[in-house]
Length: 87
Ligand SMILES: [Zn+2]
Image 1 (spheres, rainbow, N blue to C red):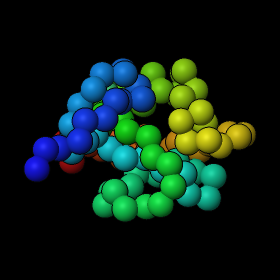
Image 2 (cartoon, rainbow, N blue to C red):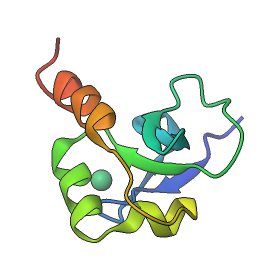
Image 3 (cartoon, rainbow, N blue to C red):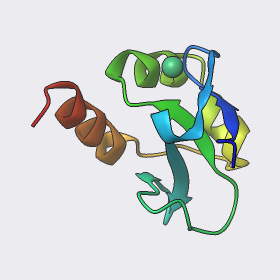
Image 4 (tube, protein in one colour):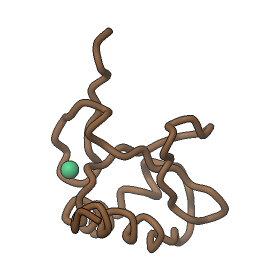
């Protein structure tokens, strides 16, 4: 079975989906879909604070996830920063 390829919303590079995090909106907040099972639209992103910063700067999440209004990304930032420091 081949691994699906997805595009990172931050750096726009393509990568295997198992190298990326699936992000979804839950209750007005951006969250990491750890098991990749949550319903609805998902955005794919590297486990990288740099990619998150790019995605936020370009405001890709509201567009990719079809939400209007502000989106709280602090939970996802905590996750990628933790992954980046290898804890
Ligand atoms: Zn990326």
